Image (cartoon, rainbow, N blue to C red; front, side):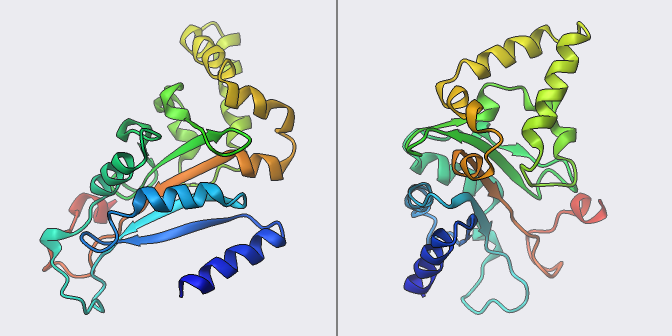
Length: 218
């Protein structure tokens, strides 16, 4: 199966198709491989994102599922950050505002040309000011322009001294400056912007330990 998946990535790269690597994460099975998976994803020039999905019980799980030992959203983030060699921190991740904050967390990173160094956007931008731009979407499509428009409007309206400082800080980052000439080149942007998503799901039955009433109601 691993060979088939690698062959599929090779085929997508030959056709210049971008894709994400999606990994089901289970405690005690592959949760120690998250850093290695991230490194592998960054080595593939056509992989523009990594999605981690902690195992949940949908009624068909036959491997002795114990909900008390389930991999959680925060557990996946902690494991990935610990194994990333300092590349990521838990504070780099933000809860997606659509549905419920426990339903998904993500971060975007700017990569250097070689994809060997990354700059997580939340380290240099107060993303709480822009969460509405992520509402009901998980795609980066149009996000750069929307954030730039918001920054400009804040600065022009005199209410954006902090926004101006953040804009200057971001534009001073080498990885970001290097991206400016290629912002209209979708292929180059795809190679230089990397998204990481943690997307858990609630267990299927209310008899298990992972039921979020507030998330279900929302």
